[in-house]
Length: 285
Image (cartoon, rainbow, N blue to C red; front, side):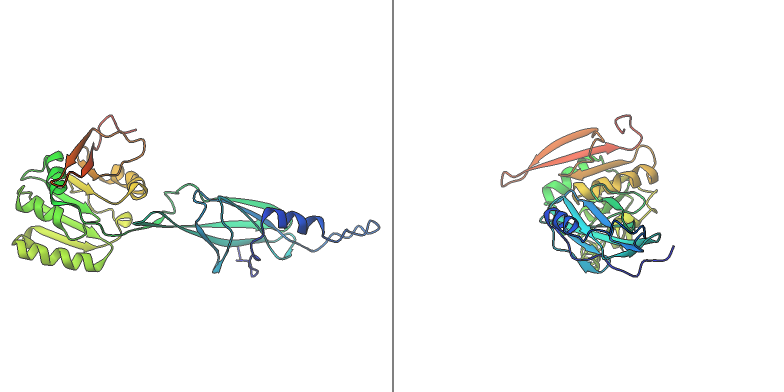
């Protein structure tokens, strides 16, 4: 199907849209000629009222969880395709981009629901780097019961401290750190070399939502946010072998009930929540 050559007009509030529709000139009752062009209407549903929304390459200005748009007149009988992209920050360290295509037709209303993630069209999720305190690193490794035969992956590895500690202190067989930021990978490699364990570590610049080659992991570490955990959840269940331990600092996995939850307190009195899941365990829905 060919992409429509027309773009959506400026955002109108529901009240303005109603006024536009009711003030449109009436058709001559004496003619039966159907118009060859009509506007189309688009309703967009969003879970975040302050999300930024673009239609193709055009930014819109509406806010709210329900937004209504009207097109210029379109040729009747033709279908038009538009790409809508929403951007929002659910917290001060997470940025999410969600894009979907929508088909509209002249004289009709289309509804696009952007409130839910789609596994077939994964969101782009960018996490700001926040180091995991060393006390928490050691507690995560203990919760996962990391030993000499383990292969430990850290998704969103930051400066590499978790996998470095895993091979240096827990004597894990191998560690793999993955991060989307090349600067963090550079730091990780330098830190591994300084610790004298670079021969047992592999650091990769990758998007954690686009990897599927970590089936050799026996332990997976996470500290990235609820949204990214939920996006990773089907990947972890699909790729990891039964018995693999997954540990997350602070963030959960929705209705996937953890096998164990602990609280860690550092020297300053700050408390941290840690969660353990075991792949293939009956707690997984």
